[in-house]
Amino acid sequence: KRVLAAGVLLWSLFTALTPEAAALGTAPLLAARVLLGVGEGIAFPAIHSMIARNVPPASQSTAVGVVTAASYAGTALAFGVSPYIISEFGWPWVFYSFAACALLWLPLWVPTAVSNAPLPRPPTRKDSTAVLPDTIDAEGVSLGGSSGTQYYSAASSNDPSSSGGSELGSASTGGLRALFSRRELWAICVAQYCQSWGMYGLLNWLPTFFKDFYKVEIADLAAYTLLPYIVQGGLGAASGVLADRLIASGWSIRSVRILLQTVGMIGPAGCLLLAVSPIVGPSPALASQIITVGLGFSALSLGGVSVNHLDVAPRHAGLVFGAGNTAATLAGVVSVPFTGYLLQTTESWPLVFGVTAAHYVLGAALWAAWCGDTAVPEDKL
Image (cartoon, rainbow, N blue to C red; front, side, top):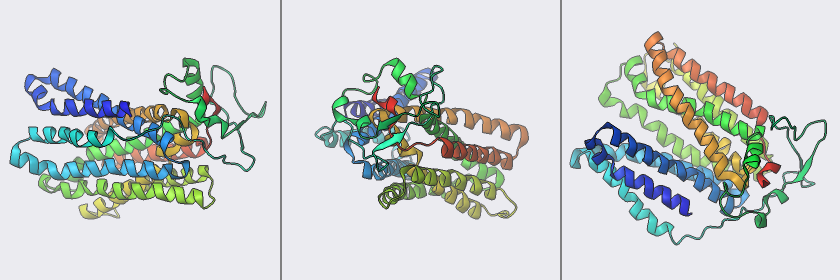
C-alpha cells in the first residue's frame, strides 16, 4: 500500500516538473522522465502484489482485467483531452493536470485497509497435490522429472502465517535464483516479451504506418489510432471475467490461461498479416478495423499471462510481475528502433508486420509448453 502511494507521488511530482525540466535542457528533461518512469514502474507490481493478498483466487482474473482495462481507459482519456488542454491552456498544463490527479486519488487511498498476507489458494487437483514441473536448470540441480518426482501441497505453499513483510525481504538470493529458474516463470517473461514486441512496436509505429502505407493525412490519424485503446479496455475487463467464469465452470486453470493467451497472440499475428495483404487493398479504414480486432484479441492476455503470476507465485506476485514487465519493456526498447531500421533499409511494412507476427507465434508456442497453474515450491523460499 505504501509502495504504491510512494510510486504515485513520485511519478506525479516528476510529471508536474517536466515542463520546467524541459526549459532547463535535455539532461534535466531526461532525468525527470527517468524518475517519472521509476514511479510508474512501481505501480503495477504493487497492485498485483495486493491483488494476491486481498482478492479471492476465484476473482483474481477479473481484478487484473479491470485494473489493466482502467489503464487503457486512462490512456484513451489522455489522448482525448490533451488536445483540448493544449489549445486552451498550453502544453505544460497537460502535465500539471495529470499530475494533480494524485491529489484526488490519495485521500481515497490512504484510509483503505490492505492485507499483507497472501490468501490461501484452493488445490487444483482432487487430492490437493500437484506434480512439481521440471525447472529449466537451477545451478545444475533438477527439481523434478522422472528421476524423482516430487509433490507439494498447493494450499501449504500459500500459508498466510508464513508470509509477511516485503517480497524481496522474504526471499534469499538463492531462493530468488531458484524461483526464477522455473520454466513457469520463464513462460511469463517470454510471453510478455513477445507480446510487447507487437504492442510497443505496433502502437508506436501505427501513425507512421497509416501515413506511409495508406497515405492518411496527419490531421486524420487520431481516427485510426485511438480506437484500439478503447477496444482493448473493454475487452480487457471482459477477458478477466471470462477467465474466472471458465475456471468456475470446471475448466482447469492451465487450460484457461493457455486458451486466452494463445488466442491473444495468434489473433493479432493473423490480423497484422491481413492488414498488409492484397485482400485489404487501398482501404485504410478496413486496415484500421482489422488492426483494432487484432489488438482486441491481445486483450485476452489479461486472462492469461497477465494473471498467471498469481497462480504460480502468489507470495512473490509483485516481484514476478515486475520481472515480466521488465521483459516487456525490453521488447519495447528493442522493437521500436529495430522496426525503424527495417523500414529504413527495406521500406517494407509487410516485412515489419511479419517479424512482429513471428514474435507472437513463438511466444504463444512457448507459453503453451511452459505455462503453469499451481504455486511452485520455490515461492515459499
